[in-house]
Image (tube, rainbow, N blue to C red; front, side, top):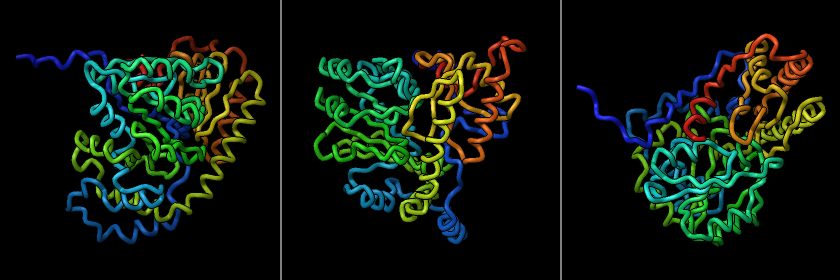
Length: 379
């Protein structure tokens, strides 16, 4: 007997396996190039033997919520922890999306907004960003929100993959345009230093997303948090998975908050290397690079997919290939790495750019596995 088919909405979706091609240097996932600071590693090591592995975690991560609340100048009731930012994105769509509801996005942007919306049969309304600057068209966005039929709006700032910031006054216009929930994704806040957190006192319809994955080297432990009014947080707790944040991640998150200052040298270095990388790419003939306030740079080159393939196959360097994504023709994205990693990438790219007609040896597109899995159903 055959199995009953799944929901029609997910029929065309492709599973996301996140497989990374074999390479010496991965500069594609916007991870930190540095491990945890020594003071934090020492505290983790000293506490691992006596850690309560056998016990279920605190469902709401009470101790970590309190520490984050103090750090951000809010109440614990303003915070909800999640298994990475992805869980909180999905929870928000579970609560505010679904059949008969709609979400507004500004492509090109983080693909999971549209993928989760599609999965939950939520209508996706798109207002493209400016093709040159990737700036948000705030006039069009406010006008669309004012029609009153949008339930949820995602604003990624700095935007992934462009690194573009959205101004606070523009986000205020969106918040004032309707009662739609405005979800501001600040996953790269620590690299930009710009936040709309002060707006939380003024607006009931604001949610802010943060993560420990990027600046704090915890991508492997999956830990993110949302900041919002207590009523919004209470709604999100209704749909979240119980015990979704494991006890070890909660403990590591507490130590990160306590040892926050130990991350500053690495953050300063990443920001400095971002500017060095930008300047070097900008000076390289045949490359268009966009300024970024995150820990990655988007750049455009002719025959970008072949450049990507040569970097991977010949140089063992894996960057993200967006060259076939809508609005990102011939674009690649590179994560800011250590000085040594950035130097290796720049030398390899310069070699590739100076090697003549890149398509002479290969004319078949070899897909980027991450892009294929995440983008195919989104666009």
